[in-house]
Length: 197
Image 1: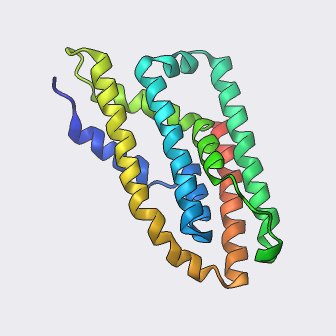
Image 2: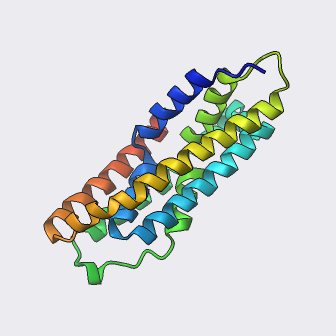
């Protein structure tokens, strides 16, 4: 079995370091507290596991092949990202003690990842290119999916604890307001991007 590991890992690294909805959501939670960041990251990782499983058994390919189903996933995902974005902007100018408690960082992370069609399409476009066409596809898809999830888990294990320094900077009300408005605007922009692609 000759998997194209080098090109696969390079492409995966590029995808990982380009900020997307998951990155914005996790970092905005991690800036508030490491615990919230970990919860959001665990939600995102659970979503990745679901995408990896679906891609491995081929269900994601069926959704991607059906334009109506893919558009529905895009619309719901974009709506959810826009909702989070508006909520973040709305709470940005409120003092910390008046902000609504976000108890569901895990659920937000899970939904953010599950409803992001770009994650599904990443699995469908990246993994087949790295596979050996002369070997059995299922074991290769399972291995490459597991590596993808593992690499992202390692990335978040490093990034989330370091975000606490950002949290110290955000203890200043003006800085926090600007940061949260920027995160909210970025999420709304990403929602528009999801619909546009």
